[in-house]
Image (cartoon, rainbow, N blue to C red; front, top):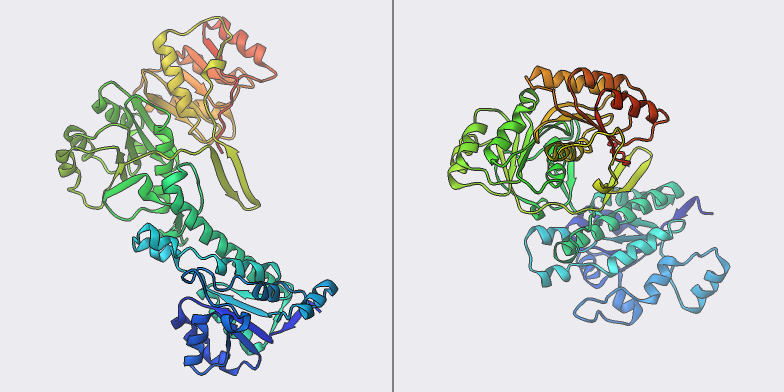
Length: 502
């Protein structure tokens, strides 16, 4: 019967022996057989618990300076055996296997050694091989074997030893937790190795606890290695929301080679500007929407100098990111110690985007803008500066939540509408915002992340003096859209590429 199984035989291999002190009373009361790795067996015997060591049982001592201890057919055969499956029953007899009912394994503490800054050779020796294999074998055979794989599960182990039985549901749940534990363990190792050889290898590593999640009543964690991408020069600890906005800011900065500054608030760029003069880049980016810039994230791809620092010190913002700061700029900025200053060392290079939803996970390739596919469809071509603004606008619009509209002029975001359930509202918001901050819309470029299904949005843009519209095309009413732009002498470009972001 698979539903409930009695614990008669235990395999035990535990790195942190002191943690086992909490289960010694239950182990002393256990009347079955205990087989343990050599070090764990010695510990148990010192505390008056009878057991057999692996080397005594298998007849093979640890070898290769301890690298091979438990990797033996007798051990794994006894973990993987199905004693009510006829072919396995014969093998159990023929090979003198001892099927286990409970397997308890704690892995070498690789993550802890990594935090301590151990050298490469020391870290390599803390990559567990046998332990991971033992856990996976027991978890695979969860119909027959219950597996304990972390210190957090020791209370569960005590309960099992007291009951002396396990249910199918318990074994299955612990098998899931064990596979997840080995996944996190391998991911941490892969993340460490990725620093040297796999720059675009994205995995979950050891979590860093954050102040809280999106809201104070939520816990928050970060998986990854921030030190690969930047140095935190000063300021309070990064929050969950800080990291969301920093990620958005870095993604947008990566679109540009020329000097550019961006302001991000709640995941959306609210200020973007590029100028030959870096000082104007920062000032213009904030001028795009100075109200939203309050408490936001500011990022630039150019050096921050003293005049930039003096300008920025007049406002409140959470984080400032830049590839470099002059000493006198840092002197000015450090006056407020809670302000987070980050030096960008490199940008994440990823070609896939992974998101979790409550149904599971979504994975997609990273979008790349294809300017070569652009097509003039209304008969009016753009001048060089207008075309540069159009490309600037497309780089920005793909980073705003859909439905998204941006209005740009002279390499500056002057109006934005995002996250709207319909496109005409997004256009209205972009126009209203540009007017509120005193921008002249006449001659501006309007960029949409999706096609226009009707001419109503274009009518609003025309009334404000918009001279060019950039959109994907693909509507069943494209002919009407093109005809409207021809009549109003609006340059219309179909990019043949949608830029949705949800």
